[in-house]
Amino acid sequence: MRREEIVKHTFPIAIAGLIAGALLISSFIKTADYSILYSVANSRSRAVDEYSATPIQLQAIIHYATSPIVPQLNIGEISVTFDVLKKRSPCNFLVFGLGYDSLMWTSLNPRGKTIFLEDDPHWFQTVLKDAPSLHAHVVQYRTQLQQADDLLSHYRSEPSCSPSKAYLRGNEKCKLALTGFPDEFYDTEWDLILIDAPHGYFAEQPGRMAAIFSAAVMARNRKGSGVTHVFLHNIDRRVEKVFAEEFLCRKYLVTSVGRLSHFEIPSFANMSSHDDARFC
Image (tube, rainbow, N blue to C red; front, side, top):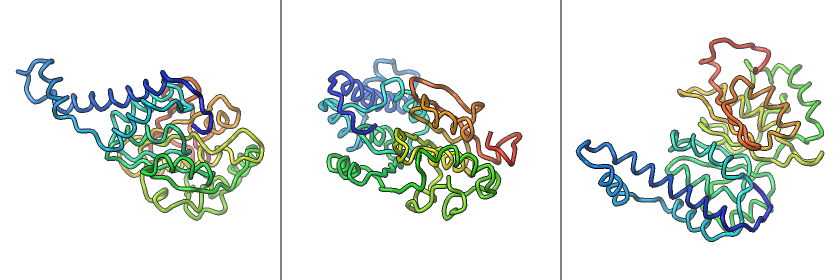
């Protein structure tokens, strides 16, 4: 998602095609049921005639059709999230990380809320310079990757981290709870959460432990209907794998493509059975 400027011309065109195709399919679905007397050809023609893209969608199509810089996620990984967005959009979509695919994600959730959380202020300015319409915030994490094992032990012994009591805003006792974030992070009920940040390659980097834990807490505390879709990238890395097993749960895993895993997490109220001491 970040700084790898891979110069490939086919992938940006594929992304542009994905976005354009999604818009056409969406408009076709909305118009195809007007009358069974219309033929498929006429329905398609009507869909094209009545199609109206949002400005952000048009911007994204032009951007990815002409840019040599590609997202870090491959087309298979993107499609996993896109398939859910087609069904849930417009929805509330939270993305950990800001990057070359941010304009794409925003355009695939037209008229919905898509926000990005970025911990690198310099990178934040770099991305927003080229895409100022993105809805993004600079945030700070309290963790370091080298603390991953200690944080797991802490979670198991700290009551404010337990599934039945866990909360995020102002929860200073639980070191895995994301605190000090923008109000809309806490006040919005998220339908989709994509975790592709913060950095988790070196010991001093924040790692994704708190993001994974907090996504699980928000999903379990959901008040609205339906599940929360959580997508975790870099599932091949040890920390991501261990924390996914602990908080996102193997039983909620829907699919894995490449290095991306998709979980559907029900709210605490809709769980048929639960263990107050463990998330899974």
